[in-house]
Image (tube, helix red, strand yellow):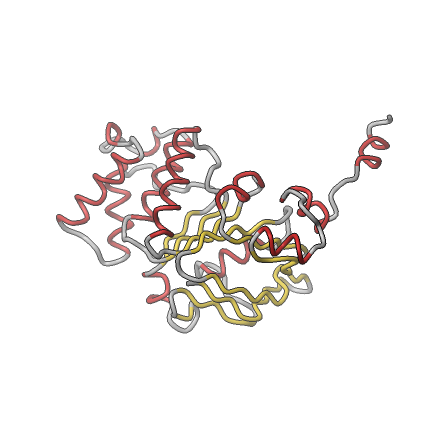
Length: 252
């Protein structure tokens, strides 16, 4: 599970994340939504241990990310929005390298990386340098690296970017299978249709705060939105451009 308690991140006088508290239990696929600059990526990087909170706490699978970073990170798979790989490593070497960071090696890891490369249709490029990989192939390799050590929690920022429709569907199925077996997934996306279709619960972030959170039914109740779609609720909470403003801007 993921537990955020009074989480704050400041850069000088600017507050990027402003007192967020959130509990995401085991067996949940949670969508974190918000406009650009809302604080989503900053929050995810604090959960992953990349950024240190100004105040508040982050717990992953029962371990405090600041006080017990190695234990927390051992249970976490992080998929960033930009797929960074080492160009002079092959796909297989990259996965071995990542597994080694978690202290895992040997025949079991070799079987695991073969399974993942096959799953994402990267086996033909197993021994090719990643500098020859397309953006989509790099994204699939990064996803594989987040799964190679069998984490309990996955944190993923814009998971579908660069993936073809077949790979995107595969990733959706992987996430659903993962949470059905008791894992936890926290996913950030700008594609509201994906969030509404995939996520068990949703949190909408605006101005560094949680503006609404829960199931779609609960969010509609919180925002008095009737049977509105997620897009309509999102725009209501985040101040989306009204049709009349759009017409004025376009000179209609």
